[in-house]
Image 1 (cartoon, helix red, strand yellow):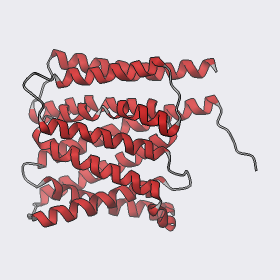
Image 2 (spheres, helix red, strand yellow; image 1 turned 135 degrees about the horizontal axis):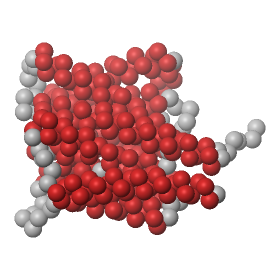
Image 3 (tube, rainbow, N blue to C red; image 1 turned 180 degrees about the vertical axis):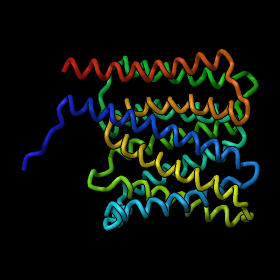
Image 4 (cartoon, rainbow, N blue to C red; image 1 turned 45 degrees about the vertical axis):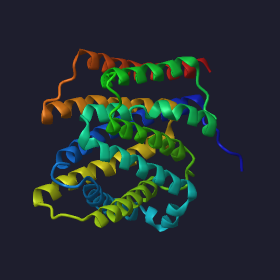
Amino acid sequence: MSQVVPTEPDTRRDNLRAAGYMTLSTVFFSINDAIMKFLSSEIPMLQAMAIRGAIVSIGLVLLAYHSGALKRWTSIADPVVVGRSTFETVGSFAFMLSLPHIPLASAIALNMATPLCALPLAAIVLRERYGWRRIAAVLVGFFGVMLILQPSTDGVDPWLLLSFTSSLFFAMRDVATRRISGEIPTSLVALAMAVVVTVTTGTVSYLDGWIWISGKQAGLLCVAAVMVGFGYTLVVKAMRQGEVSLTGAFRYSALFWATAFGWLLWREIPNSTAWLGIALILSAGLYALHRERVRARRT
């Protein structure tokens, strides 16, 4: 039986759809991040992650059962799925533990280094090919991130370093996602991640001691869980369908949501240098998409 090879129009359509998924996922993740940062002064972060993860896991089990994917639950043990879940867990630990100590916009901006970190990995592992223009666009986007962070000569904040470390593991996660067999349902890939994160954070936080939470706090964690569930599902769909080097650029849109929530909740207003960085990041993402369209028309 011959294998169907995707045509260039199909590839372009897949990339556009993946870009939409990724952009929408940043909205959900930004809402989650804002809620978790808001609760960090009231609940230990690892406990909050464990409770949120348990809610997400239950929701994903119901989703997998409804879609019939749960019948293939043994797929969760696939080595690539396990590896992806591990990368996600370590990255989430680093990101969430640093979140209470740094501004929301800074945390999201550091996380935007993920596409840059994914470039060499995608080239080596996935054999993706891209020209100097797309590489330049990603580098410009990273320069925009640095403008937002505005590093000084006073040294490097360890919490900022921890937050940046998360982007390295998230890049590994994204590349691993592309190696997952298309026969494994997306809901099961997301479920595997949620279970690993929940068990890990639950174990560590339990040993450290849990506290009682109020009904309001539980409600906010439920909302965060819904946001994470939708966000993770969309990220998996995006990274399985589009090119890592292109789709990852649309994570930059999270900077706008982080800026908005930062102002609404904590009155964090970016200065002119930060706005320049945001503009560069948006321009880089749009230019990367433009180059993909040009390439598709020429071939």
